[in-house]
Amino acid sequence: MCLLSQINTYYRKHNAGRIVQGDILREVKFTDWDWDIKNSNIEIYEKVLPYLVIITQDCDLDQDFKYRTTTTKNNDKLLQSILVCPAYGWEDFIKGDHLIDFDLKMESINSNQRNLIKHQQVPRYHYLETDSENQTPALVIDFKHYYTFPVEFLRYIYKKHYVSSMNELFRESLSQRFSFYLSRIGLPEIRKMSE
Image 1 (cartoon, rainbow, N blue to C red):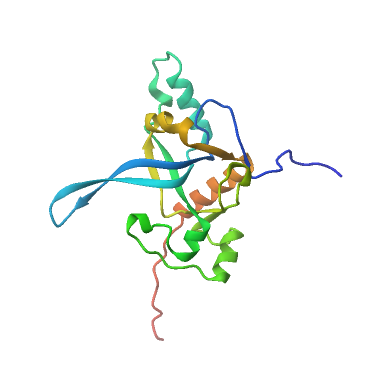
Image 2 (cartoon, rainbow, N blue to C red):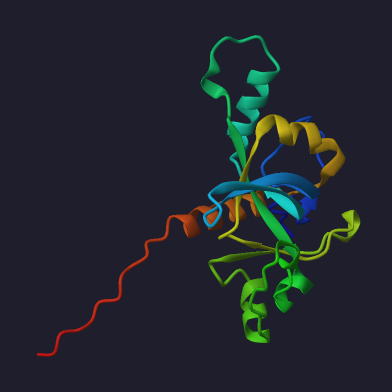
């Protein structure tokens, strides 16, 4: 039998010494803010993301890392922030309880939708298989939810929160699906004129 790919798992651990696209981090606490219209002031609060996945392209992450670890004076490769998507536990997600810590109740997912999501047939969601080796449950990414974090913040917490990484083909699939979802065109509903 001909072996066409050396990739035989969804996940792996790496020793790149830097943040890599497809890295999965656990229990990331951060400060968020919002504008309180009623009181005309800024609300600041802490949040914890149970899991997050690095979405920024790996070539950009690599160039940024090289810039930050050399003495070059050209700031052309410097990243201001890193794009991440939160990943929610499958069991909480299907019950609609995955954002309960944010005081949000979402709709539950029926069995037909579950199957479609697990097979990557719903453009809004991306399903991540269980990673039993690294004690990570099945996860779901909702492409409507994403954050950017300062590079130095992620570099500071990286070692403590790193769980594993998606293998290259799976991270590329995630990246394509995310960019496709964000670039979709919302078409208006056109009422047909009676003849």
